[in-house]
Image (cartoon, rainbow, N blue to C red; front, side, top):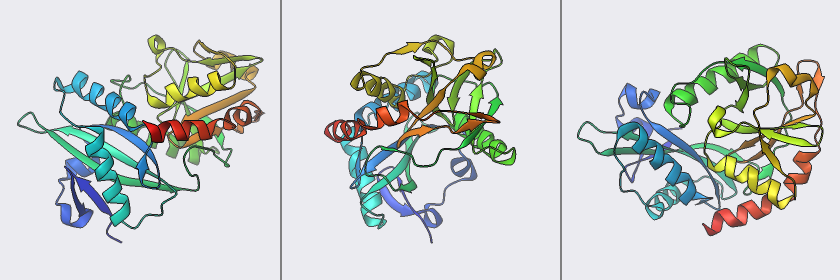
Length: 273
């Protein structure tokens, strides 16, 4: 099946798009993954703001692109691409053109079993992947490719998820998403100054903690303390992923269920944005 793609607001297919190898392989762009419900994007204004902030920081240009434009293009892609109306994710990619303009792609990424945000049923075993990222404050083709390589590495080494650790031994993310570590009754996540990244998923993680009446401490989890961790949660673009184990170390699944009670709130707030 020739998949549909939206390019600069024009709905076409990958075969007809005549994209260059650079565009297809993602040589130079920023991106964001957007969750949708009934073909409507969730938290789109915030998602677009972070993507445009990164574009401006990396390329020195702030393009004019509105949430209304992107929402209409996402709806057309999903509706005319005949995707189910429940849960889908799409990837919005923004790249500079040679004349200082903007090239944007919107592609369907996955159909999910969740209508909005959900508690992801799969609890994967995790592997530690230690690597540094250039431009790590931003979601780019570099961070996405690195995450895909790390996930492939995890799947080949008796894991299904890769937790990224820095050279300094700080546990920073899983895939390209923020994570939360539970140590006793303390919930830890990496601060921005130590490798955390501003993102909608990070904001939603703190929002879930607020709704659950618990506090997240901005303190980077470390490999040195990993055996003392009770639970690891990942805030993905579609909801909460609870890690089952790291090697022989089994992890709990308590705060994931506490947080999951408020995922419908995140969904309704995302639709309202």
